[in-house]
Length: 167
Image (cartoon, rainbow, N blue to C red; front, side):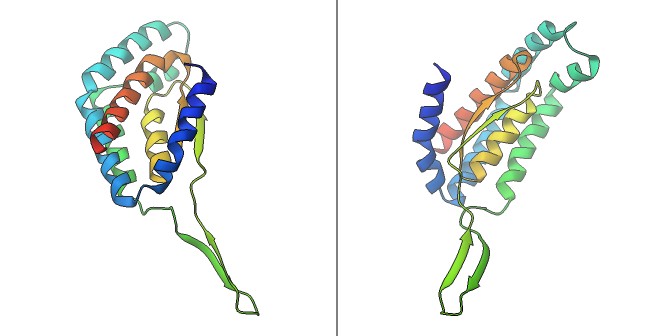
């Protein structure tokens, strides 16, 4: 699938996500977190392959950022659960004023539509970015660094499975 096709699919999905209420988004986030934990073995296997390919190409500090463990996956899931607990930003009134003629003007938070994020070889960013985009009512297109592709792909598969379970 080309980048353009991916972007078109995300744009087509964005109205559905933008209209989702808080309960639906929070439920989806909790299912996504559960799927991350349930897919830990697959994610760790993919991460092992990413680490093997990255050795000798990046510094030890960058290898540590790339490395996942059961604890790090659980922390990713916890981060998604914490996003579910945040207030829903969609529809919140940011500012309100009344003009001298009585006209009320409100500045209201709305989703952007599609958010595209390109990030380095840190697979945990995949779940963080997806969770924040969903909570804010946005579709997202994520692109990890090439050395984290397998890990990010497995994380994305788990997140998608959670979304499917949530309907």
